[in-house]
Every structure is written in C-alpha cells, then in structure tokens.
Image 1 (cartoon, rainbow, N blue to C red):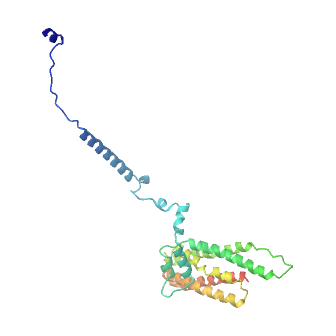
Image 2 (cartoon, rainbow, N blue to C red):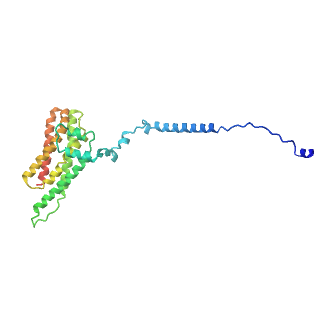
Length: 269
C-alpha cells in the first residue's frame, strides 16, 4: 500500500486563500460620478454657448419676433380675440364720456386685424351698393343693357386704403416732427383710423335708399359718431406734441373724415 501511495506523488496539501470581496460598488460609484460630471459639463457648455457668443437663454430680437421680412414678425399685429375686435368696433361708433377710446380699448395691444378686414369689407359693400343703385336706376329701362361696374371696386379700394393706411402715417409724422416723440405710435393711429371706418359699412348699405334727406342724415350721424371717437383719441397726443398745431391738425383730421364720407355717399347717388 505504501508503494501505491508513493505512485501518486506527494500527498495533497491544502492552502488557505484569503477571501476578498470585489469592489464592485466602488467601481460603479466612480463610473456614475464620472458620467454625471461629464453630462453636467456638457450641459453647462451648451448653456454657456449662445448664438454667436450671445448671452445665455436669450434670443436675439430677430429670433424672438421673427425677421421683418417673414410672416412671423407680423403675427403679433393680428393676435386678437373676437371680444376685443367686437368691442373695438362697437365703441368706435359709440362715444363714451369720460373714457378715451385709445386708452380703454386699443392699448396696450393695438392690432391690424380689425382695420384690414374693415377696410376690405367696406370696399365690397360700397362696390355692391353702387352697382345695386345703378341697377335700380335702369331696371325699368328696356333699352338699356345693365352691366356690372367692376371698376367701382378698384376706385373704392384706392380711396379707402389711402385714407385708412396712408393718412395715419402723415398724421403721426406731423406730431412726431413737432413734438420730437409722439405719444401715439404708428400702430396706434392705424388701429384708430381703421376701426373708425366700421360705421360706414352699414351706412353704405343704407345709402341705397335714394332719398336725399335720408342719405344726408345717415352721413351726419356716421361722421358725428365716428369723428368724435377719432378726434378724442388723437387730441391729447396732438396737444402734447405742439399746441400750435393741435387745433389745425384736429380741423384737418375731422375735415378729411367728412370729405371721405361725403365722397362715399356721392358715389352711391
């Protein structure tokens, strides 16, 4: 048996090994910490880097409001709701004592939505009314072949848009030239003038009634109501600009308002 034990070589020897726990938690903590530091560093880098070295989190004026040549720039001028537009239309023809139409209903957010569509609607109501009057005049004439007068649209559009969009620029320029800095912005005056035409939409339809005193009564009522609101809105700014031009400017504003309305009525007679 001894020979057999020797045939297997040296006897088995057992050696104790020190058991060590792998430092997995430490390694994971290091990896997570390094990842967080890298992500934080990258986010700070993106935050610090503005457009073309600009400030953090701030957009340039063109980015915030859009470029002057894009539609995004003009969206803010048409951002109104139905109630705002309806109130501005109603009170542009209903003077209220103790209230300034501009301060109460237009500011702080003047718009171009109402003035644009009021101008367009007035163009077509005048054109339709003029052709209706022309048709009624020749309806009993068997020898006359009535035709629609398309040029009425172009004439009405030219007159209305010159009055509602060019005249306000001239008024603002006069006040700015005299006072250095007008209390009224260009947008304010455009908005006031545009809404002042709202009363002439129903009036132009009623002018189809070919009775002289009825037409003149409608003219005086329309000019009196809308002219009062228009003049009361512009008068404070005109006084601040220059007292020497306040009265002449008021006379010109009201006079041109009357002339414009009279031209509308004459075109329908």
